[in-house]
Length: 614
Ligand code: FES
Image (cartoon, rainbow, N blue to C red; front, side):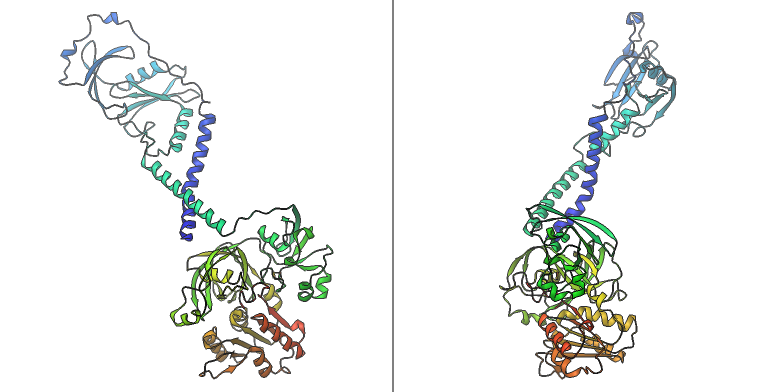
């Protein structure tokens, strides 16, 4: 329903917007300039002394006319003429039949070019010469409504005056000039009378009125939806200016933030998106900026940022208020949102949905494997359990209490599961997180993205290379992941094996709950057969009795299986749930792996421990 409303509103805005501009432009012109033209150079015809014709007029009853609506004597350029109206309608422009007779001789009489010229000159009050006179057929020329042929006489004055004479009766129809002709065009556009109906009640105007009503109502409905979703909030407090130098495109921007709003939120509100994988939770370390202000390092920063980086002024934007800095430098920042449209979506495990997006708005930059996108998640009411789960996995979701929960608008980061050269889509593996009483915003991102149907769109910033940039190193690789944390690892594996044809050893240790939860197992088994230097080691914490592979957690398998003497100089890439990351990291450190050999793609937030890819 919401998609129908927003799409209708967007499409209706095109014709209504165009017509609104036309109304505005023509209305302004008509009110400001329509009376500014020169006076029309037209005069009344001169009369004659009718006594001159006393007793000389031809008897009307002897005219060769059997039946007429009316007969009257008129003067045409000083000549008395009988005008016999055989057929007429209320308006002069409607079809009519008229015959003329010389009122003295009784001879039929017609308005030829000479007579039209004489009549036009009699009515013209200027002193310019007649430049042209021509016969216009009905429904053409300068009088589109006219249904009878008429003469148009053009005068060579500065206003370009012209006079129209009815060809049957010789009557003066109208006169105009260039200014009045332009005013008439403005009237036509203003009243949308494109078919010259001469009425305000034409069908086009009625249709546009109905469309405008639909446009207004859909806009109102959309506004109510946005208000309900918390997209409009009133913020109070003094504004503080911050100069931002965006190093990745050498751009200088000044933003304004409210006191007590975090720098990360302030940047986001100003359409400057830093990578923020944990959504501001202070656990991912991606929202980095540099400052020369002496900002005290927060506990999260001393934990996530090296001493040398801290000394260089590196801080986390989610840990400081906007008013604590006057100028900052950021290395990796998106200043333009992309529009991503779902091209396909399917559950690949009971909880993980593979969603592929096409970029339909904005320019997608080439990205390294391991990059992530930051999605703008609107607020609104959503279900806590999916509705489109395949029937074979419904029993898993039966254990959860299905509710409807209100979410505030937020942002969520997800790693891209493919590499740049694999296809023209962005693929994500998103785990549906259940909202619980202790994790009130749990599922805000996953419930929204997993509910998008093919064809629906969402805005996202990126790709951000914070993990990819640090993770892409030559040499042997050990990749350790769990759950939907498979996304950046899959991209790294494919890029290394398929695109870069690396020859060094690669081991992928992947943990899941049971056979159903294993993602892309067939793909990795196929790669392991195809590439001798690639080993795939899945392990299950709760396997079925039929499982013949490794059992237990990835940290156990890593400890048991990995020969640390052989892999002591390898690089380790970790992505998965927070407890898994912590245990694997401490295992690696205990095996004398240097911290700089360990690359962690952490999406875990303080508030939403298991949101995003993990
Ligand atoms: S967003 Fe700041 S540490 Fe994750």
